[in-house]
Length: 122
View 1 (tube, helix red, strand yellow):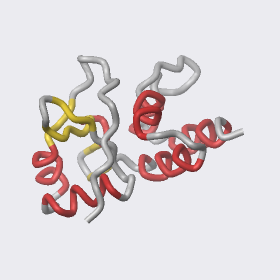
View 2: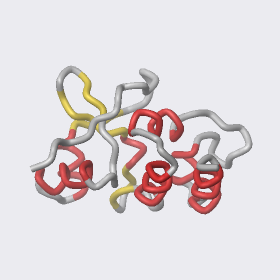
View 3: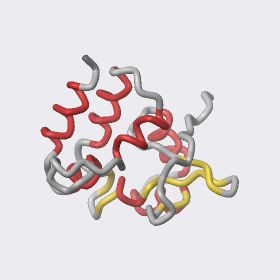
View 4: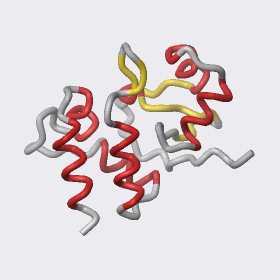
């Protein structure tokens, strides 16, 4: 089994994170399937106090925020590592609806977020 990729914890202290077992429960998945989401790049985790944590903003009432996995793929194709992805997703950008890329995704502005991510590849 491949190792679970983990980003450096570059999140601000006020960014809520959830332990992976809670993420699995919220998504109705086994721990193995939750870990597979991390391996597949559908979610990004950090390690805090030795425990895998996922930003709470990556989840909504229906599961993983729509467009997150596609955005992570675009960023990976642009050469970003997981730490850089995390930093970019939570970076303030006043020109985006929602102020940060992750909030823009959460408010159904995924097309604009992906467009900006694609533009960074050039």
